[in-house]
Image (cartoon, rainbow over the protein chains, first blue to last red):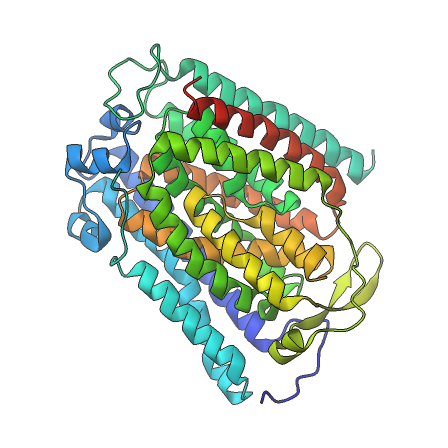
Length: 142
Length: 324
């Protein structure tokens, strides 16, 4: 049973911690995105798909796109991280992953408060998000 | 001129510019109808670098509207971009989820710190919605594009009707918190700046609300819409959370729901950086501006701007799905 916490107009400690990590992760993700995108459009690194050719293919379904160009799926994009287009996936992955870190960060505080129900919810959510991120689940077969 | 009139003027101008961007993009995209499955051979009048610029300004305005309307960037982004830009719906949905995610990440920290977004309210809901969003994303990517376009158009029209007819309650009457919400500790106090006083809140009908989030999660993943349009009525009208708590928590909630679906699109290869990155940057900048207006904004005014845009986009999606 959770220890009785006085409800206040101010955000709880866990909420503030979540917010701070979310903010930092978001800033890191955006900075990385800005840098990698600049590298991409400036043509500093070679690309998997030439940037000027991308408009030719973006009308295709993802299945045809992947088949036509041999683009990586799942975490295979890491093998193409030296390519300007796939370097952008680093920032995208940071933005997509930051919530996982936020959840993990608040677990100790919730455990100290013996907030068992919320700890269970948080851990389940971490499992769900990690499963989604794992690359096991893919689609796009039409 | 009062702040409210300034806001109305800005929003009307923003809506006009959005529409113009979309129409111009559609007209200049190609001299030939864009095939939905093959390589586009026709010459576009817009060079490749023109598209990121258009997308950036387009999503900047969407970001502001999304925060104030509490509907998330995805619900505006996906139908408008898929309707008027030459990108396949698979990539638009992937981008839409990331755009909605980015908007939520930009707004979430401020809303949490101000205690307008409630972590305790969001977490049980997010668990259900994010799990179902994964399923929705996988189903959505497996369906043919024209079918998804038709379904998307129908859903958007439904959203318009919902937004136009659903009553919203600034401070719903919740006689007593139900047992489930008490067990989960879903309750709080927030500062209502427009009234200058602190408001206690609690919720009821928690279980029916959680069940509805199954459907919300499925649709968010399938259409890349972000789900704010459904979150708010359920949180506010059904579960009884105050309107500003509902809007703010919905916006924060998107950062979790959309994350799970976005990973499916990312891992399936349905992400093109040339589309996604300028869209994300634009929506985040717009969301930063929007969250600073939210605490003092009269949300009702924004609703009608958003409804008009969505109606336009929904009809366009239906027509495109039927090949018109």
